[in-house]
Amino acid sequence: DADVTQTPRNRITKTGKRIMLECSQTKGHDRMYWYRQDPGLGLRLIYYSFDVKDINKGEISDGYSVSRQAQAKFSLSLESAIPNQTALYFCATSGGAPYNEQFFGPGTRLTVL
Amino acid sequence: AQSVTQPDIHITVSEGASLELRCNYSYGATPYLFWYVQSPGQGLQLLLKYFSGDTLVQGIKGFEAEFKRSQSSFNLRKPSVHWSDAAEYFCAADNAGNMLTFGGGTRLMVKP
Image (cartoon, rainbow over all chains, first blue to last red; front, top):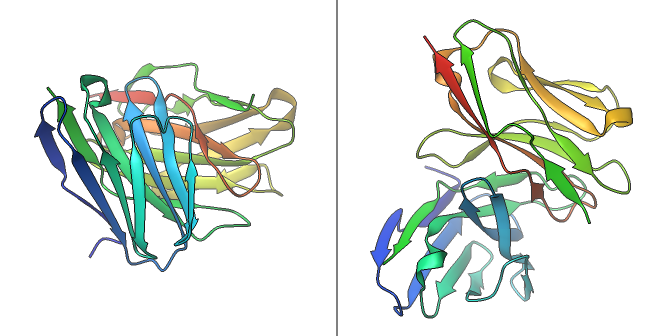
């Protein structure tokens, strides 16, 4: 089984709808991250969490919210989806300092019409 | 501001030819450096990483990268490319063990 899983893998939705993307990990890591990938821009950080009680905004958090339900679970929500949130979304985990090597899920492709 | 730049958006090489993908970083101090590969429909897989010490690091799948402090570069190389290497490659940097900054990616195409 994969160490980092994301559901759903693909989602098409309409403008204004609420969407939740879920991430689970079995690596036992405390740190979890949400990124979005757009062509030519690489991956940009949306939110991150260093433990269950810690939530931090990343570079592009506007229009998104997150919930850390447990050490192993970190969900990303789009409260009212808009077309420019169409992207590939990745969840990642890491064991933290000193090296912070991150492990990525397979991604969720989200299309907002 | 901290940044990572991959100057080449697309690169096409012939199968069996050598490959070099460029990566430059802009940080106050030498960051930790990573190369990831993303195959179509897949997540990111770590190819190799540099933290300190030997400036030539070996990774998986026959890849290596060389850290050059004077050029603020961490270029990825492979002596002989295989068709299965076609993918998108991302360079990333982390200056404090907390946050990765990614380059824009280089898409590699391999000609038969």
